[in-house]
Image (cartoon, rainbow, N blue to C red):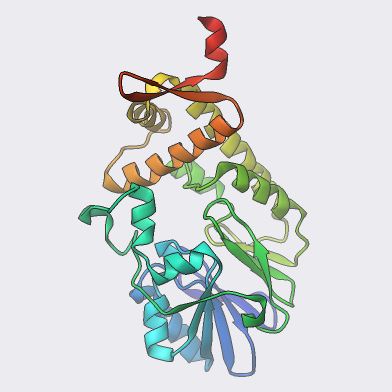
Length: 297
C-alpha cells in the first residue's frame, strides 16, 4: 500500500485505496491526479514525491468526493501547488460542505460532517484546457459525479476516476454510489471505446483492456435498476430504501442511509425518466409504482 507504480517514463500511480496518478512534467516537477481521502494521505503522497526528488506543481481532481480531494488542502499548504477541478466539481472542492449537503438534501447533521464525507476546504481553480500540462487531455466521464473528469496523458495512460468499480466492490457493498444512472451507463459505453495504453480506475486494478470491467459495471447497474423497480409497489421512498437494502444485504447507518438513499433516488429518477415507474401522491405521501402494475389492477 502507498507504493509508487511506474506506467511509463512520465506516468505513475500511487497504489492506495483511491489510486492517485502522478505525471512528471519536467525532470524534477510533477502533478498528481486526486489526493486521497485526508491529510494523512496527503503526507504519504508528499513523502513519496520528496523521496523521488519531485516538486509538486498541481493537483488535478477527477471529482470532488472526500476520498479523492481529502489531501488537497495539506498538499497545497505544504507545497503551494495549485488545485484544478472542472465545473460543479470545482464548487464542491472549494466548498466541501456541499457533498454531505447534496447527499442529505438539506443542512447535513453532524454525523455526516466528518473527513470521509467532507474534505477540508482548499483554494481550487476552475479547470480548463489551458491549465493542463502539455499533452494531457480531459476525458469527460459524468455519472458517478456530475462533472467527473478523467485524464489522458501523452504517454497514452488514462486515469478514469470512479466511472467504474471493481467486481469485488459490488460483491462487498452490493450497490455503488451513483449521481446519474443514465449518464453513468453512457459513460461506461464511452469508456469501452477509449483507446489507451493503460487504464487506471481509482478503485480497481490498472489494465490494458477496460472493456470487460465496463461491461460488468453496465450489467450490475442494470440489475440494480431492475431490483429497485421491483420495490416500487405503491411504496413510499423509505419503504423502497428498506426493501432495496434488504435485497443487497446492506445495514443502514447514518452514512449508508445518506449514500444508499441518494443512490436509490438516482435510480428512481432514471426509472421514471425511462417510463418504467411513476410517482403519485396519496394522503400527503409520494408513492412509487411500476408502470406495468397498472395493467394488473
